[in-house]
Image 1 (cartoon, rainbow, N blue to C red):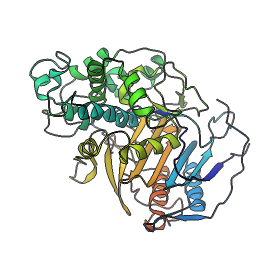
Image 2 (cartoon, one colour):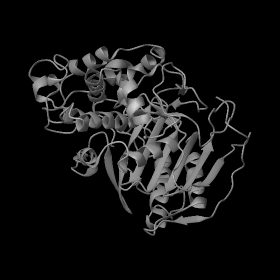
Image 3 (cartoon, one colour):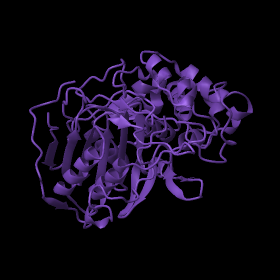
Length: 450
């Protein structure tokens, strides 16, 4: 059966209604030495792919061309991605499309409005909730975590690690994911398969992170750790008096107007969604399918479900001051550099939010991955230019001799789509022939930290 593709072109007047659900969880490095650089039934009738050539221009002179967005989306599928969906906004003009299949067996097509586990994009939601409490005077960013959660981070480290260090990943507390899924150390999906319906308490997750050797002294360096955001969830719960997920739902998701974003309370995704395929760098043979999974292991670090439209609406609300004030947003955008082994800055990480430099400017957002699902959302600083994209195949790359993922044709196609979405014709990849070799503009390349 031929793959069916979907495209939707919309123009909004005034307030934009939101109807997306967000799911986010974080990823782990495939090996201790291979730190990746910072990735139901269909709704409605099938719509054939259409070549839409209309270009929208914003007052800054940046435009997106619907036809080129369609081409770059399809090129990503043709490069080997099973299915993907994208939502693009320039002011009140919006485009959404999908390419490929949601189920490789039945060939059911993906759709733009599918719900998706968005992984570590959850961190921006959690950080926003923490900043709200800071603005209310109930938390202090530079206070030690032991002041609010005595004994959670025991000993002297609890007095040295601050709330800010948890938010920007400079605490030095190690990531827990390899401890939660120990077979990842030998690139085996065994523990992923075995833990599909396991429930894990936050206290156990935090213990795994604290038992591992620290990655650095508190405040000395940036080191990505999901453990930080599980601790922040406990902090939210202690200060607010309600469950962290409940607080985020009431004070972040609902005020942003999101209708399809939620923390799942069961192993299944509620709305129409794609299956999620995990390759584990070619070591999961046959491919594992993880759309049904108990996400207690990710919690406030990465368990949200959402849609691409909802993600754009969330970041637009955040960056335009609808969720926190200017002071809180300024703190979120105070960054530390994230560098590769050669000292090159890949991105700048703030408080649950990072910035990337693209050919047409600076963009803010986050990426996320769960086993089988990758997501990235980026917005201009004023929230006027946005893209959110979801994938249903993760760790599709091969590893080199040092255990580092190698660039894949999918990465080149994704880079072209992002630049076309955000920069229009301004970026070098925006006019590049799909499938040709080029360095992706996004450092993460959807190489998911497991």
